Structure formats: structure tokens, C-alpha cells
Length: 196
Image (cartoon, rainbow, N blue to C red):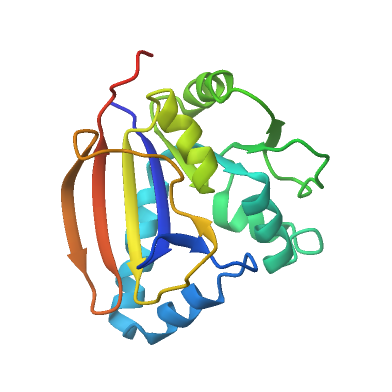
């Protein structure tokens, strides 16, 4: 059965970006990992993404990806990463479109987009890329099945929160954990306590 998954990296103190919306802290942590750990992490992501049929991201995440990778000048990079997997971007403003990318823009309730993603995904998993507020909107409606969390060895003190919602221990079940000497990885199943 297809799952809606929030795959995300965070600092020890629960932020997915620093106060300047930077991920340099994450790249620094990744660079400290052994080559073997880096290769294993890349392979885990390849396996994860092979099971993804559709994805969704917030405007801040989308803008960061475009700017960080200069995708308007190098649109082929998007296709290299994501192929034909359709992506929905939640935004309240007009954003540039990466040429040739399968991107739709949305606003408001996540339920209609979830339904579109499910149809487009054709039985494959759905990826909530980020940010935390968007993942929280899926969780609010009982539409989030798993949180796949990598914790980097850094504290930020402030920034964009991992998931700005209260999910108690009755809603989350740890189903897997591991580490590679740098990152600790946790998989939590999210109980569907909301009527869907």
C-alpha cells in the first residue's frame, strides 16, 4: 500500500534550515561523513526515490532548490534528479517554472492535491519534501504515514522547525533507527487518528 512520507534532515534541536534559510550546516555534516557512509546514504535515497510516484514541496523549499542549483539556467538538473515524477508546489505567489519540469502550483487545502498526487502516483509512495508546515498540513488531515528523519550532529538555535505541530507519543511509533557515525536515522509511523 502506498505511503505518504516526509523525508527530512534536521539539526539535533529540530530545525530543517537555519534562521537565514541556509542548509550549509547540513552540507558540512555530510562532508564529515566517511566516503562509505556517503555512498550508503546516496544509495538509500535512490531506493527511496525509486518508490516515489509524486512529490510536493512548499514555496520556500522550491525557491531554495531553484536558487541553490541555479535551475532556471540549468533546468536539465531537475530532470536528472526527479525525472518525470510530478511535483506540486504550494505557494501564494507567482513563482518561476523550471523549464521542462513536471510542476503544478497549488494553494489552500492539501486534500485535493493529495488526491491528485495519489492518482498520478499510480500506487507508488508520495513524498512530502518540505517544509515542516506543509508536512504538518498533511498530518493535520491524517494524510501523513511516515516521518523519515535524519539528524545531523549540529544545533542551530533557531530556524525553520522540523514539524511545527504537536504529535504525541500515541501518534508516533518508532519503527527503525540506525546511524552511520555522523547521522542518526529514525523512521516513525504516524497514526491516522484524524478522520479522512
